[in-house]
Image 1: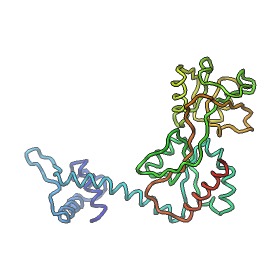
Image 2 (image 1 turned 135 degrees about the vertical axis):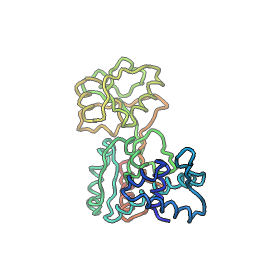
Image 3 (image 1 turned 135 degrees about the horizontal axis):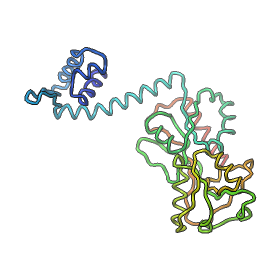
Image 4 (image 1 turned 30 degrees about the vertical axis):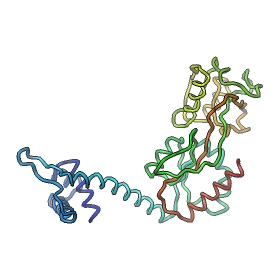
Length: 296
């Protein structure tokens, strides 16, 4: 059974026209006809027939069953081709959100250089939600993702590495800056500048405001962490961030939240369920695990 025959047939199911399929693949119409005949002979069943009364092509029940399975076959074939291409030069597409990257990567990169791994790694930047979608579609090999719930996905494996708290972030001159801790309900009158839906922060923030029973005053949302930090420093608003998003160099104050229960920022190492283990992948994963234990 030829993969090209499966591609032709799948397009035929959609187009219901031998001519359109031939034009789409830039081949002759008999090429498509012979491909379908080969499939019918191999499977011992009729896959299509012409309804002369309505002058149209009809896909049989057997044809529809085959089409359903072809979708999965072609999808897996595309994944296999991608993985084989990556194996040729052993380059891993490694998804790293900015917040987690700032926390992990400066120190982790020295480990990677020392172990001669950096040249095998291509960093892919993006929010955790975006990187999750790329993983699901096999566009990247593995990622460190931030979530507020454990990841359960039949197509992915997930290993929880670290849990961090969310904190309120203010300017050193803000009236809350001297507080050692606070309840979320105390923030009803505050103006917020927040990360947008590319990150998990909005979901955690919504949980906190609902639990505190108030509608927050959100004046700005963005996916650029540095812009938000600048706005917080200028006292335009206060922030709600995972504690690891703020460093001592930021000249900002972080205030713990006392509300219970509250969501935590979970950092997980995530990869596809069915992948080919390689030396580079194994070394990278082991280094991440070791480094996580040190940072934790």
